[in-house]
Length: 629
Image (cartoon, rainbow, N blue to C red; front, side, top):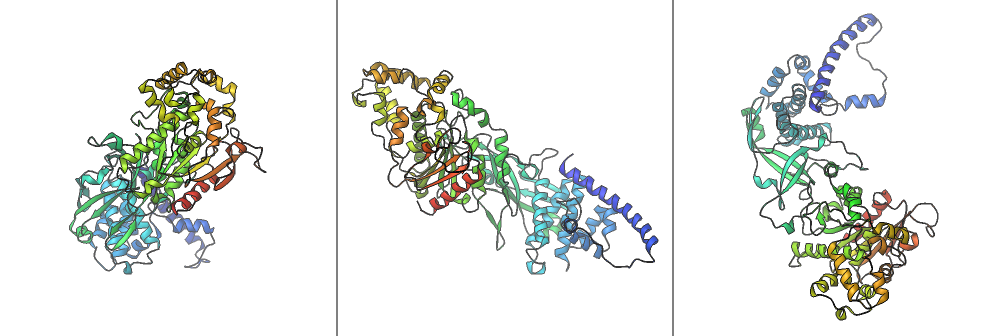
């Protein structure tokens, strides 16, 4: 049974029960007439009374106290139960009187209830129009306290009725096309400018109501209250947009709000011919809308759309496969970088880099909290990097650097956006090592681990030299201003013990090109020790061994001047962190003497979703946005 049908059934049942209760009450009254007073009180539980007073068409499928009061003043409460259509018609015909405010709100709620009971979208549309008229066509001074129950109920009725009134037939999809729709008292002509559906290099499509989604797996649900029906939408790439600009992942869901803005609503309700514009706002582009002289917040549900996108995401299946190098589930994302919304000048990029046998999906809790934060959300843009985590760390670090450089060249080739030059990289576990590679000057130190001969003097094919140079030689990415290390094995981890490295080496499939170039280095290198080290291309697990030359070299390098460094280090047990670990990385391996801040969290290695970890990330980002180190 659908939500609307169920609510209708509850309302019908409630009406029958009231009839039975009335008969029972009459019998009881006759029995105790001699001792009962006409007016009195009855002791009830305060919570029960509060629930009764807060009842409405939206929450309980019954009229609110205010609507019942209005009906009873006009002696129409029983008439509405007997014949709701005739009663609604009579109420509508008397619009424009001194009781306009109360009448509009009652019409909105009663139309919603009748639509629920009869599954008639025409009455949902009428409910939305009545509620809009109550909110925006009536002089606010003639209404009760603007913070009172009426405006809040009207807003809820407008938002929910609009979504239900725009549904396409029996399907759940919301139809935002231009068309003429029926109303109980006339017609509604809806128009939409197709540009309303454009979102960067995408077209918004496949709209669905977030009111009908229960979220699981995320600690908090962020629903930003305001006007408009909160929806989710798919993003379909436009044909004439360069692929380099299309960095939003497939199946991603966009939080949007749809607003129906009727023209001259007061007169249109009486005339019966309503014309209205549909307006679509994405969460990343607008937080409020101007209606008349007022700036009204828009209603969004960012958490529901995030969860909906992850529900069908291939990222979960990527985690082990990505470690083994089997697949990359986003083949069109050649750079490995993707965004949660099109690039916005003026917003500081926060780049999240996952760890070994993981994926960007593991950042969901942090992403939800950042998007839901009214202070941080509008000032940041979240970028995520995906990579095969079994590859050599130098190679993955090179791919991250290449992705960041390509993004800067694509989005801001003229270097006009100062926010883009304030990137913050947040890396978990191996991802922290990739982040560090973006802010160090390596010189020839990494190459020296592979060859005692200088890079220029090594006999290599021209193509091999061009391939290997950016992998072995790192300079700081100038746009990165901060790195946050989470559970990062700066000096190696338990994963890198030799027996485990040897075990997984036969399971991990490395890029063919990388393996072939490594073989060429081995054959061209006269140094016996270097040849021994490169007998097989090292994996990321090899690189995280405490005695691996890569680990020792990277740990000896210090971040470039001007780059702020913060550490979040999980350990499992209470007490001093020294001598402890998170099960994968020891405190001593993760600790940096030069970090501007260090927070020890009581957690296992997968601490990205830990509330203390998230709170620390948010604290650091607030400092970052304010220019503090």
